Image 1 (cartoon, rainbow, N blue to C red):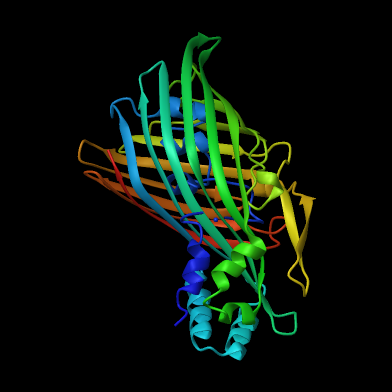
Image 2: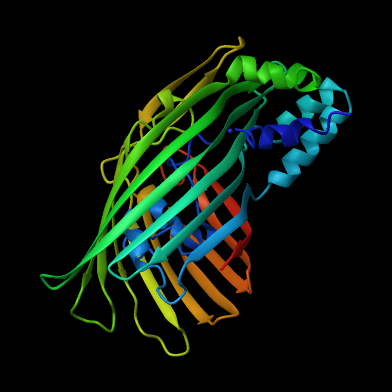
Length: 391
């Protein structure tokens, strides 16, 4: 029985593995993705450190120490279960022709699966706030191709983790508002995998793990400094307008140019928090990420040999970088809370819901990732589920 092979590909890096055509990312909080991925000027979550370290200055003050533990964030393409199921059945049949049939059926369709945990402790003391967290994540992208004699399965994957910390300080009465300054630091390590598997490889169940490691594995680590600022205007206090700027990944997170590398990006955003009856807190945010087009799009040349070569091309698409969202905290008390969100991410609609009861949190979000060089070339509708303990 070889039913372990496909789950192993998807989870190869729970000890370490991640992505290639998406804009580079480390962690997508489903609360933020539900509202279009916009968070640079609004912040308010411990995971805001991945967009703008200054964002933790907007953590809730009345909650004291904010602890988020053991949260599992699972994200998958809409048709992920179909291809994984069909490919697993074909492998289990020990029939190479059935594997080829599956590769032909899904030829050119990219499937993404990722599992991530970000556990953190944070606190907002008013004029200053801090947050420390541990990240552990793995992702896999599978793309069948039927344009060779027997077909191939293209694989990009990574497993990565590390420590993230951020500190913010608020300077009051700077001009017409308050200035929140943020400093973040990250140390991360990863194992990345880029290459292809043939039907014969997939049938070689006993040795496929060693073969993948020998042929594809790259180990790397790196560190970065993140800088951020949010300026909250004093005028129009009923709207609480703010603008944000972040410079992320200053350092060595390119991971030797392997899959999963994080470029240094400059990101800008704006937000308001209007008072709406019957809603405890409303946020409306607009972001534009990677202002100077540091991200690149990677194309692979999967020849008949084991050698996998690739070329990186400039990715400068405007719509892929534009994010807009609205969230509403319906209620928040000592026992439970409910937040809903919607938005536009890379031109596609998003939606999300986050419910907390006692120390248990359950959330769901959907968004559409543009995976081609330009908006509209290729898209991947994804669904995220989060289960965690938080207080």
